[in-house]
Amino acid sequence: MTTATLPHWDVSTVFPSLESPEFAAEFATVQAQVNDLRAQWDAANIDRQATLPVDDATVATFEHATTALNATLARYSTLRAYIHAFISTDATNTTAQARDSELEAIEVTLEQLTTRFTAWIGSLDVAALIARSTVAAEHAFALQKAQVSAAHQMSPAEEALAAELSVTGAGAWGKFYANTTSRMVVPLTQDGQTHEVPMTLVRNMAFAPDRATRKAGYLAELAAWERHAEPLAAALNSIKGQTNTLTRRRGWATPLDEALFTSGIDRATFDALMGAAHEAFPDFRRYFDLKARALGIPKLAFYDLFAPVGSSDRSWSYPDATAFVVEQFGVYSPRLSDFAARAFRENWIDAEPRAGKRGGAFCMALRGDESRVLTNYDPSYEGVSTIAHELGHGYHNLNLAQRTPLQRQTPMTLAETASIFCETLTRDAALRNASQGEQMLILESVIGGAAQVVVDITSRFLFEQHVFERRQTRELSVAELCEIMLDAQRATYGDGLDDTQLHPYMWAAKGHYYRPDIFFYNYPYMFGLLFGLGLYAHYQRDAAAFRGQYDDLLSSTGLADAASLAARFGIDIHSPAFWRSSLDVIRADITRFGELVQQSS
Image 1 (tube, rainbow, N blue to C red):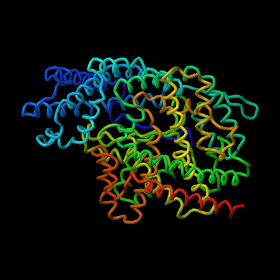
Image 2 (tube, rainbow, N blue to C red; image 1 turned 135 degrees about the horizontal axis):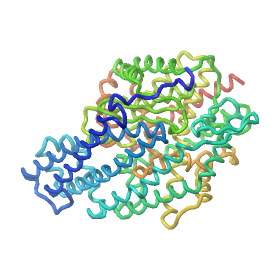
Image 3 (cartoon, rainbow, N blue to C red; image 1 turned 180 degrees about the vertical axis):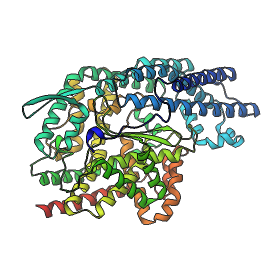
């Protein structure tokens, strides 16, 4: 299967097209539902008030409002995902862009209504409400979080204004970033010929076995980011500036404090996690040195981080990858295997790298128990691992499908739980019957991925933290943003990388920085990796007992905080010892990798 014949996802099962009568009718229905919801909120005075009695009338109002809000959120979410399916795969689709812009007006109203609902919950005795209402008891965690959020709201008029201005403020800058980077083409010179190629293909050159090819892609990428740096810096300054303003006005000490609350963890957990990560940096630097030795170079450059190490006669064609994933998922359970087979059979995957398509990979819930997975497939084990990882997200969505939208609000810290589990399950299977060269190839890919999540993620966190701090006083120039990023990379990679060959424009390359609704996106991925490894260790110790609890855990990630859910498996996430034990798994992989490097020398 060539790149040109890799599958595109099919969303026609939802609506025939963006121009279809069915889509237009649903768009109108969602618009009407949101308008009806606003009328109901106005009539019931659902907004911030003085403390209200939790009597029969209040309970009835709450139950009606919650049911209506869940129904509206469910239909809106499908509509948004459907439109995003077109935008993320073709930034030039003007019809999708137009529908997305129209939906933003609905989104603003829905956001305002959700904010009003949160403020109203803050006016109630939540414990008394939960005791009197079955609906409230089913949404207890969401209500308890809403009570805290209500204490950090501005006045109703200010919150409404903030929601409206987000469309033309940080939201517009985020859209500008997505559209600009999706359409970027990069002049690339190879063999004396210069061609313009999509940024996704240039970034995929980092996986090339030939160092000259990797370097050529790296230099072309840096040059392209430099050409676009000024408007991207303006976007980043605006988004982070708005976040600083709203965080301060809502009474949070720092953006990180708000992010930790949103992520469902406390400062003690965060400090334990980050402390264990810093302790592990010397181990990762040992891995970087081992990889340099395996590549026959004195020191890794940034563009060597994804270079393949080891050898394999096996070519991971896309059909081979899908068959392998289905087979290995079946080792865990028929339900997981059947889910993966369905995803491939029903064309849930968009795998072809192409111009206008977003880079990287993601999974999004679409409708009911359906998801869609975007990847830019590379015929390597890394490509296989990415598919397994993203289908893990889809399996998580499958288990959440029974919940209401308010119950499905999973924090990012727990959103990686199933994806890391599925990725690790596939990794272990690939290693079992691999030759020495294949073991090195797979193991290095796994450790390299962990290095990205522990070392590089920490560098990105440090960058964002410093940008927030310095953005409080003024805008930051392109040169300053680059220097902050380089400082963060030096503090984490240390002497593991060539100090003259880092990536000063990583702030431009990572789209998460430009999400106005998410900040400090980075550390949850580290939490997810290490928490997932901890759960996998439990699975290996007692597979039957683990299977009996795991799907329920996945269905409950919006019903409790991370510490409570972890306690079900005897895990204390406040303890540095847990995070060290997960990192010990990676340390053991590094040791084994070192043995393979020694044997191949």
